[in-house]
Amino acid sequence: MTRVQVMRLESTPLRNNVNHHTSDVTVKELLVRRGQPFTLNLELSKPFTPDRHPLTISGLTGSNPSKDLGTSFVLRIPPNQSLLSKVMWKVKLKKKSSSAKGDLRLKITPPANAPIGEYILTVSHRGEETLLAMPVVLFNPWCPDDTVFLPDEEKRQEYVMNEQGIIYKGSGNYITPMDWNFGQFEPDMVKICMKILDMNNNHGEDPAKDVSSRCDPIYVGRVVSAMINSEDDHGVLMGRWGGSYAGGFRPSHWNGSHAILKSWFNIDCHPVKYGQCWVFAGVMCSVMRLLGIPCRVVTNFNSAHDTNKNLVIDMYHADYGVAPKDSRDSVWNFHVWVEGWMKRPDLAEDGKYDGWQVLDPTPQEMSDGLYCCGPAPVKAILMGDVDLEYDVPFVFAEVNADCIDWLVTDGTKMKIYSDTERVGQNISTKSVGSNKRRNITDCYKHREGGKSTEPRRLSIVVSAQVMNYNGSSAVNIMMEEKEETVPVGKGYHSSPWGVGRGTLFVATLYLKHLLLFVCAPAPPPPPIDLSLPILIPFSTYHKYMMDGDNIKISAVVTDMENPVNIYLAEDNVVLQEPPLAIVAVTPCHCLCVKTTRSSPSCYRGVQ
Image (cartoon, rainbow, N blue to C red; front, side, top):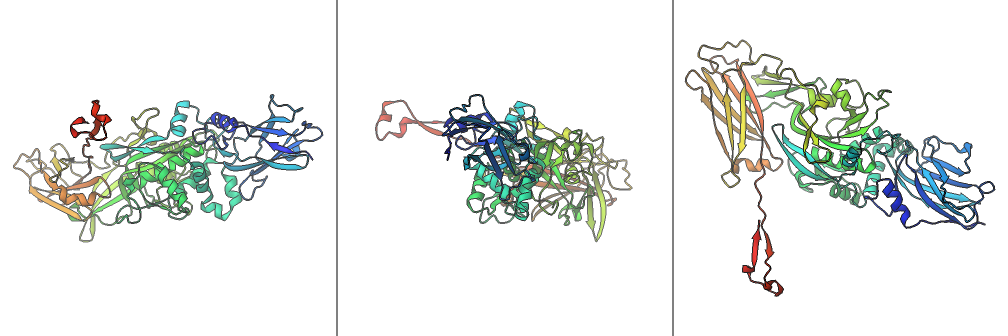
């Protein structure tokens, strides 16, 4: 019987992985991209005579492989049409092969629509079968036939290959960059990402169908979105937005994805504690890039959470606008998600919705019974096509919802402000090839023609600045009443003395359970400006800042001569990081550095 021997040249994995842009991940294991050929070397003990003794290569992925589902295939040299399957792999001998010597160089090409994942390839010849290779197949943004194809090389380098990124936080008026290490090429990332796919709920219910569906980046994107959070599966991260962080780390602890993913993998797929939106998004971006789907992190400032799907965010305020009434709707000062690049043939044949798709791993609302979101085409959000899959109405509301503020008194409510422009500001992502921030708001929404749905006769400008960082640190808040503005309240008529006559000025700071009221009468007529500084010592507010770096301020102006005239303004104060000076102690270049113990005078501080 002929002995079949697979000979892996030491350079074979390296050459294949370099050609497939995966050598940064590993050079020891075969990691290839679909739609692109790779080479395997096979040595037979006797000459290869294909007409008499054909060579058969079998491949499979998943625990229940099937030709009909595209998770198994059989190749033959010479070809045999009866072996056709749903997903057609290809094999042919390279010119450098020597059939007479039995030295075969096989050129194997996974189809551009093959399911991604771990494969087992075996070879049979003259009745004997042996293992040929165990490649892992990924999506291929370099392949025009792949649905994740990205035609620009500079963008491929940024959105697939770049391990370093920036995530934007803060508020719409004070945007702060945060460095994030995606680490998609760190050790064991392939095993970790394959484990994430295998732990999703769909795989537990129907493994064969789940593995077959991994040919589609739309499906894979939804799976990853669900698996990054741990709300209803064996997901990676547990979210927490306040309270105790015992048993884990505060979300602000993390600055990269690999430590989180490795920890999840090492503790038997139990969730890592804790994350918030930017952590969820950073981790998902790492997984998507490893799998080969171009991905970027996006921050939406003043991001709406519309729970009842009416495109309106109702915000309730108690007397003097201080303690808000409970409302399921909310507006986050910022929210972070990711965009994945892919075609959407399920929505339109003409490619109308191809390109960037919103995917959000933060558990906000259920989608098809799971806490996941997307992919929602950014083009559909821009055009207002909210009847499309997946979760387009929810993302549309995040950037377009109207905000209505209600004042609740004695069981009744009064509308005090309606704003169509507050939500969806300065939508930001890192620029390609640089660390500059790119504003992509115009990709999501058309510019607003007007800010309010009602005429306004009073605007309150709220500005704030964080001062010192020693024991006497304070937030200094300035509220200003401007003469040329108009009220929202009904039935308002300005007096001859101007807008501010007889007005009681009420400034309120609301921070968890910390409330501060400051009241003052309007200045003598004619009122032009009313400035009211509020000093809050660091010792008062610092304990509330352990969970974040933002203080929300609300200010209310009430006309005491006509109390139905009530005006509201809100702003977020972003606490600036204190300046940090690092002094490095380095030895001087004198002879004393050669001794075992040097005098302190021989060292100098370098700042």
